Image (cartoon, rainbow, N blue to C red; front, side, top):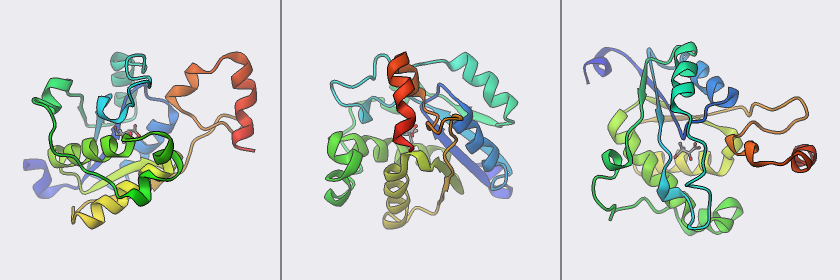
Length: 190
Ligand code: PAF
């Protein structure tokens, strides 16, 4: 609260296992905030029952070193029991125009979980500006519209996708690809 009186806070929420895509957001944040805050939280609420919540890569120590080298001022890395101290009975529910198409249609409840945790993180960190990657374009649009429609005074910025040399977008989940899948993956970009 003291910082917020005189300084602008830029915020980059993540689920950790940071790569150059995340770090480019941290560096961009410096242009919008006197103080740069990031969060690392693997949010169970946005994973479907048969998705990869348990095996999602958790690399907090390495991530802290990367955040330091990217000049991030503060990291918020809560335990699940801190962010969800009791069962969550209130949710942000994006309209059916979002969850009936694209990733929303394949991952029922996913954007409900994303919007709910981001709203909680926004309420805790209370940033002036928040930065998200355009790689998750539907997520970016949903969060931008959530902020506008729920009158949160936060500017949501989208930043360009960082890619491997063959065009594959950087993503923590690329680690799941076997050699044959990795060889094919650049076709998505093509
Ligand atoms: O894009 C992500 O890493 C997550 O969906 C986010 C925005 C940090 C919410 O958990």
